[in-house]
Image 1 (cartoon, helix red, strand yellow):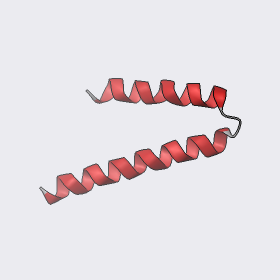
Image 2: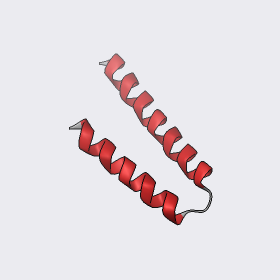
Image 3: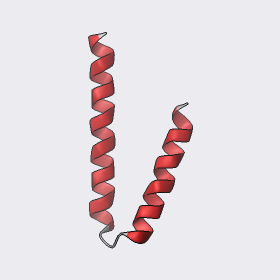
Image 4: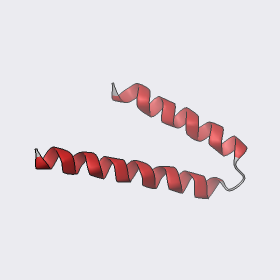
Length: 48
């Protein structure tokens, strides 16, 4: 189930990089968002 989600994220990233001039900023925001979501998921798993 995780793989299709990652593929969509990559496609979205590629699309965004072709449309947005500031590629580094866009990539950083997406990476930070993913790390943030992963951290929340880990915290939820630990608390269970």
